[in-house]
Image (cartoon, one colour):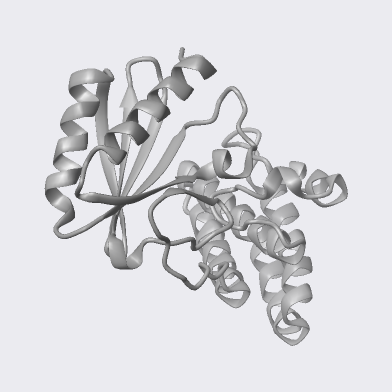
Length: 242
């Protein structure tokens, strides 16, 4: 297990490496460190602005992570023209290094603190669309019902979980919290989250009860977004769960 001292030392080493690389024109803290909100479990999140072709810089930093910092494996997440390379280290520390074309380098969320270089003005990333979340929720509710009726317990459990995910995301939007990847869930009021405990599946012989519970909560969240739509969907959703 890594320590906070391990994490700080590695982050400083990576920033120093970026400063000494003339191909890297800027760097920023991202993630919880940018907001001074780290805890013992936080990972390392850094963004680098790269002049010219990013691939050679990415390759060199990747080699450094394996050669000097005990990387065990990595994976990529690509957003627009930015590659987020995510490393798993032998001490279980996660290190996310984002390689941005210099023209795109800038804050798209509040979790961005410039360390050196120049940041471009960027439009903030839009939150998920509430209407889209509602649509995905009712679609998965349909599949939850059919999975239960077909005796496909594991698929039903998955579908019920997805309905819960979208309903909770709607609740996060309603309370001004991050709605993606569960990041805002623990900031929801207890009065909102407590009823969702009834939506947790207790086993494959316990599917109807949580499905009925999550359906009612979903209807309530859709009412907050579009009362007319909720009025049309509610009878159908309740029929599915019955």
